Amino acid sequence: MTHRADFARVKKTGQAKAGQFLILSTLPDPALLTIRTGFITTKRSGKAHDRTLLRRRFRSLVQSHAPSFVEIRRYLVTIARPGASKATFAELEADWLRQARRLGLFPRTVEKS
Image (cartoon, rainbow, N blue to C red):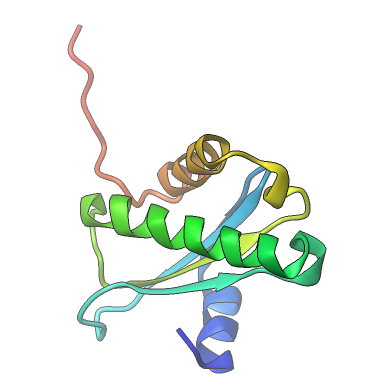
């Protein structure tokens, strides 16, 4: 995603869940052919090299987990919260996955007793 209007539409009409290190927002759009992602890392997230590292980590998370989504025709915005640059990749991944499950992006699994 590169257009301000896309980010604004996801913020206005989409769903969002906040975690300790990030905020994950999504908006389904049947007109899309595949997932459209955007990453927001403000100066409050850390210095320039920290923000670049966060964007790389977020991109890696989307690449590895998005194929498992129930529906990939959606906008997905990941916003770094202050303190995210101090988190390990495993902590970011756990937080990202928790918010994605809360948003219903993954299929529900039935546990066998």
